[in-house]
Length: 151
Length: 361
Image (cartoon, rainbow over all chains, first blue to last red):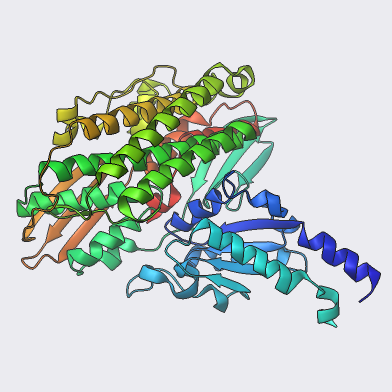
């Protein structure tokens, strides 16, 4: 491993920008992601910074069961994120559709049909610590030695 | 008439200040906003269609998933509507426990709304204080019901689990702590000169415009309209409930009404704990056929369920009317118009506490 790669690994492990997008959830997972910001969980102590700008993001948090309004919006949003990038599905909805995937509803789960998902956190809703854990595990798996893996 | 418009500025659907996807399209002249339009349709899941034809045991849990922030009140209004249809009486202890859990849920929702507003006007210190305070309320909610967000505490004829003596002591202690902290944060917000510059006189909603737009909840009470569905609720009548009203009509008043309601919720929970009757928490009963239109006060305003059931307790028809849609309409027709800068648009929109998941269902 070159010195340059070592520096990149070091920097990337302490600087993760997160963007979150709600593609049709009940808000329950949404407020649990917001609760990660609270001083009790303190997401910023791990170098994770939550804001909603896809062009600066490394991790895209996807919440919700994929409604039809997002058909032409989620894939372009995913393309706007620069490499290396990873998407995390939070809650049951993006994984299976949860209680919304019934006859007569307007959802089209799972989200992995539409964009590649790196990690999934089941739960209705999952606890903030679990969300934090998922982001931290993706950090080591996806961002470390990214250039080496790409070759 | 031809209008001179400089730029059309769309805000959203993915925006740093909005928790949920909504698009606010502003027509601006310079920095002044002359017209605004809210575009919805990113969250439509069709939950009323899923509910139709299912037994109440399933609809009870689906009703919670209409909105994750105010899940307790959706559960409560649905269950009370089913009780009204079937003529099921609630034991007095269960009625008081319902009020405790409902007020705790209202507290966490109002704290989240005030957090969003402070975050939007870039007062991050106060926002983080409020979010930390919210975690203590969530702890109390988890201790009583067993879950943080979707707790399904109420069932027809009572509640799911009792409150123990040690839980009451812990709840009282945490209420004392929360009240002490909230007094500090409310005075920080109320007396902060920089906050007043961003909030006072911004986003005016006059009482006339509020009545025209049928505004509900804290948004209406900040415009001097004393409307609250809790006045008609029998348990709240026993507790001597009176709504909080302010007459300033601006962003500042809307946030301060929520702070006042937080203190009011703490008082109501204490009154419930003091006068908690002894006895059973579950009366039991059978859900019957019938039709009803029943309302309750959600943290954002009046919530109405219109339900028709058949003889085995299946929901044949259901219509839900949630509070946010009127507040969003009032927001884009009255409050945002004439805003002096684009930065005020997001702050005003967030001050009305729109819940898009509720609105579109």
